Amino acid sequence: MELSSQQLALKERAAALSNGTIRGRAADIDTSREYPWDVVEVLKAERFMGMTIPPEYGGQGRSFLDTVLVIEEIARSCTVSARIVVEANMGAISTVMAYGTDAQKKRAADLVLGGDKPAICITEPDAGSDASGMTTRADRRGNRYVLNGRKHWITGAGVSRLHLIFARVFDESGEELGVGGFLAVRGEAEGLRVGKRETTMGLCGMPEGELVFEDLEITPDMVLLPPSGFKRGFADLINAYNSQRVGAGTVAMGIAAGALEHAVAWAKTREQFGRPIGEFQGLHWMLADMQTQLTASRLMLHAAAASRGPGGSAFPDPTLAAQAKIFASEAAIKIVNDALQVFGARGYSREFPLERMARDVRMFTIGGGTAQVLRTLVASKVLGWKLPQTRDGYVSSRGGTEKDRDA
Ligand SMILES: CC(C)(COP(=O)(O)OP(=O)(O)OC[C@H]1O[C@@H](n2cnc3c(N)ncnc32)[C@H](O)[C@@H]1OP(=O)(O)O)[C@@H](O)C(=O)NCCC(=O)NCCSC(=O)CCS(=O)O
Ligand SMILES: Cc1cc2nc3c(=O)[nH]c(=O)nc-3n(C[C@H](O)[C@H](O)[C@H](O)COP(=O)(O)OP(=O)(O)OC[C@H]3O[C@@H](n4cnc5c(N)ncnc54)[C@H](O)[C@@H]3O)c2cc1C
Image 1 (tube, protein in one colour):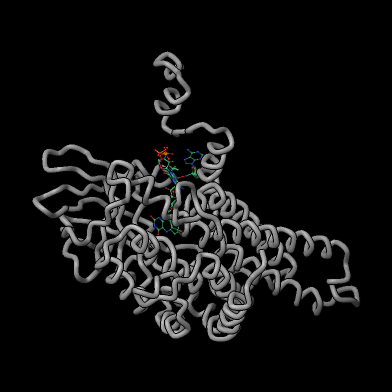
Image 2 (cartoon, helix red, strand yellow; image 1 turned 90 degrees about the vertical axis):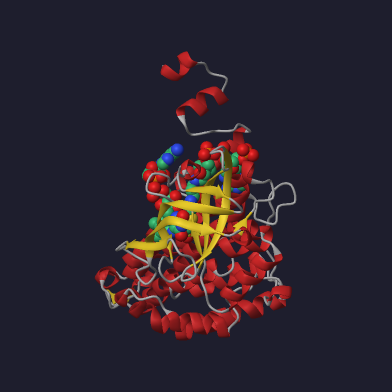
């Protein structure tokens, strides 16, 4: 995909920041397990926070493809910093920019442009891949909603201020209306409690935590009503999430790009048997395969970022987003581990970035929808069949009977 001169300039600016300040901070962010507020200030100064926010709300109205160019460059040096760029431009913020009221857009834009990385709150202890099986509920009380429930593995728990919470909606008679999005700002909302932080293998500077909603009151101005209403609210909200799936896949690809750069430089300088190891054909072919997989990942992610879903969607095509994330995340795990292999024992040392990259990249076939669940989404498109995953749903969707179900 041909990039414009403005996009090339944007990519260069991001690369300069990545090669300088960001690269210098990556190892400390990992070992300290502290959220990099200093990096947020630098991202703000470079206007990499809220790039996709429309100019009327103080942003630049940049595309998802522009954002992907920046994410890749930042991820070459630091995964935590790259994920901040993802969530400051895609996912929750782009959902509010698409579905929100004017006041909600302004509030969200001010927070993100001020350096806030929003949290998208979908996953629950008993509803991970089966996200629509969520039990967090929003009960109507007069003109407000009261949220009760719990989410976990929420990126930014305890540091994010703006939260987009997916919840099952009930009217005052207790009738279920569907799924809605609810906005809450930590520190302003009574009843939003930050729980346990996970001790993760990678992305150590980014809190992944539990959120507990205890009679969290949501006023009408903070209800994010999906365009098709609560009835198809889940579909609308997860459709908006496709932007973040492309962003997540891009972080994985960026880590791989950084790891390959390190491996190429090492292969040229490390000598064994009196010659650079880069002279051995076995490594030629490894490096060639790594580059081939990286190029394919980048092409798929750029195509997905530039795509739009059916029906005039403002978001990437769901199938292209799923395919790009499946391919890029699985390729990146292989590329990073092969890059570590090129370093020999040094690859296994904390004195080199490869072991951190290998720990960081491992999450991308899980977070953002697992590689298995995304394959089902692609298969559903290929077959032209709906493929509900519950046993009853599957049997009935294929015209089966009770007998089939109990088979
Ligand atoms: C598994 C799921 C895809 C949903 O499966 P279900 O069988 O429960 O429901 P479906 O009938 O398949 O879907 C319901 C409805 O939504 C539409 N849909 C589903 N996925 C998409 C999509 N990606 N884009 C657009 N529309 C979508 C589907 O067509 C149905 O609509 P209709 O009824 O046909 O009109 C889903 O539960 C799922 O995606 N599970 C994975 C959970 C996930 O991705 N979690 C991410 C949490 S955030 C995170 O991890 C952040 C870390 S990362 O770095 O970003
Ligand atoms: C680093 C990180 C950050 C995250 N950030 C967020 C966040 O900010 N917000 C948020 O809401 N969530 C977040 N998540 C949660 C993430 O979305 C879930 O972990 C993911 O959706 C999978 O759910 P689960 O972990 O419960 O695994 P499970 O759903 O229990 O899956 C376990 C295994 O079973 C497989 N499986 C499950 N169902 C099927 C099926 N029908 N077909 C085939 N295989 C299946 C899965 O692929 C997986 O291999 C994050 C996760 C990680 C690791």
